[in-house]
Picture 1 (cartoon, rainbow, N blue to C red):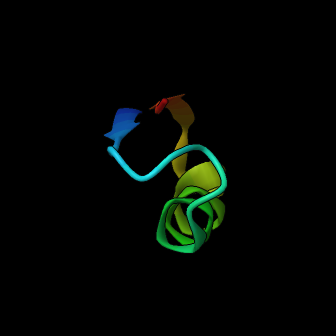
Picture 2: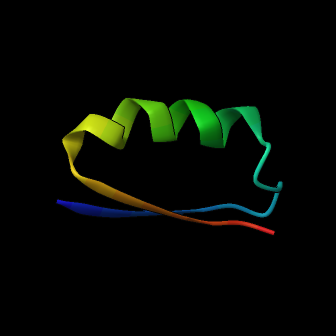
Length: 34
């Protein structure tokens, strides 16, 4: 599975990091953030 995570809060956003950590073992995760 390939997941694309995006946000407008920046790469250091707590929510983005938590979501990335939760999905990381599920497949390929790509993050796009300012």
